[in-house]
Length: 279
Image 1 (cartoon, rainbow, N blue to C red):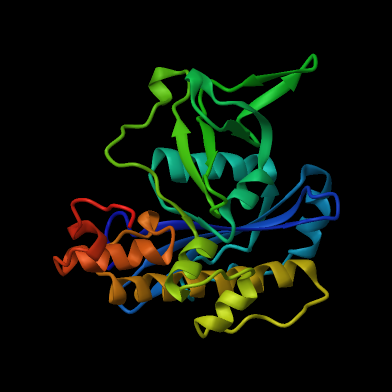
Image 2: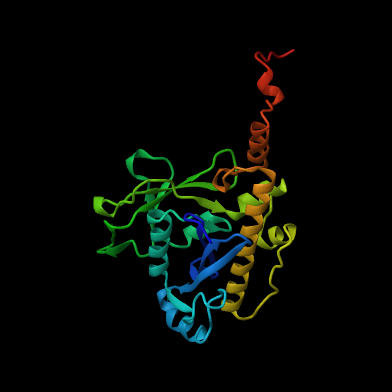
């Protein structure tokens, strides 16, 4: 049986040539003893494309084990997706998973601006967490904002954190921090080198990548299925090479080796040197 905290929300987004959200699928995953299963799947699209998506997806079934979800595959707007992300990641502390997570969340941004309180980086309000009226953005008092801090030194990835909403009653209890897991960063760290795209990462870790499909909905779902399998492979691989290291704490191959050395109580050679002088 799954344990509390084993749930994760995996997002996969496709965008059009103008780099706006076209289609997205959200898969709710639960880790089980033999592996990992999808317990819920939903499709999302821009409001202007929602009618077409509902017609295209009519009669499709969610990609879950038989008996878990008997309802037809649901299609909803990007507003519902932004609210779902806030609910799962901020309120319930599910890990938020995606390939190039900064890019994925950027496609869901309804508003962006400087981070509040003098923080570095910038603040993002997801779709469905505010309204635009009279040319100005009005954030909701009931949904949090997302702060994104690009990593320094040309390193890939970004740091993510939630800022509580203004409404005190809507604030989540901070029993633990939310996890943001970028599959590109995690896969590259375990591979010991940069992996540029999801197909390359899947090939590296033995996950079949779907062939091209003319149906954009089918292609989106097939790719999301492959990413869910990749996520499971990466978690298993990390547990084997670096037991006890949380996926959220993996940034490079050095993160893995540092953890392994620390677990073995081995001090790196440079750490043994008290005084380093130039010859």
